[in-house]
Amino acid sequence: MSAVDADRSEFGTGGLSVLFRAMAYATELHRGQTRKGPRKRPYIEHPVEVAEMLWELAGVRDLLVITAAILHDTVEDTHASLADLGTRFGPELSNLVAELSDDKRLERAERKRLQIETAPHKSPRARLIKLADKIVNVRDVGLDPPQSWSLSRRSEYLSWSERVVAGLRGTNRALEERFDAVLVETRGILEREEESG
Image 1 (cartoon, rainbow, N blue to C red):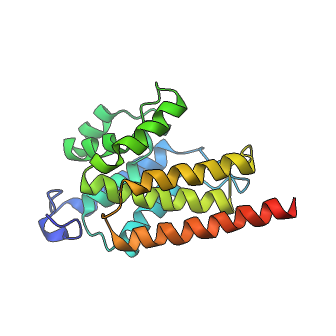
Image 2: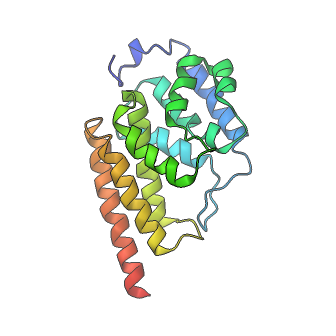
């Protein structure tokens, strides 16, 4: 099945209704959460940006992918569980979110290592979402970085993201080209910040 063919999506004809329910649920779960940057943007903007990038830039019309993009951080960053997502949205969606969720019981370094190691083995749908997520995160490291992150940590994040995306290559040309452009732009921002002291 093509990831951009809505008519044949296994998510079914009720996909838009499910997408709207997922938007409401993700908004409820992320209520009160903000991004880590100084702008303190509402967290829900992040999954919406990921979903919008998949729709607008990558041409993804598979509503399961778009819905999973909206919910992709709920298991990691809220009280929601995979079982809860399975009950509300079905096993296909909860399995896709599971592919995108780090095991928070592991140390951060191990979670990062596993993202690099598992990237090439993800399903085509998970790879699309992971690519769009990395684009948004890398952009934010340049434009609205976590306040506590040093230039060194931000630079390390870019290098690590590049290694994750290396394992996702061959998924979607438009997303890969956007990642490359955003990576160059963000590295330029960091270099200018370092020069200005």
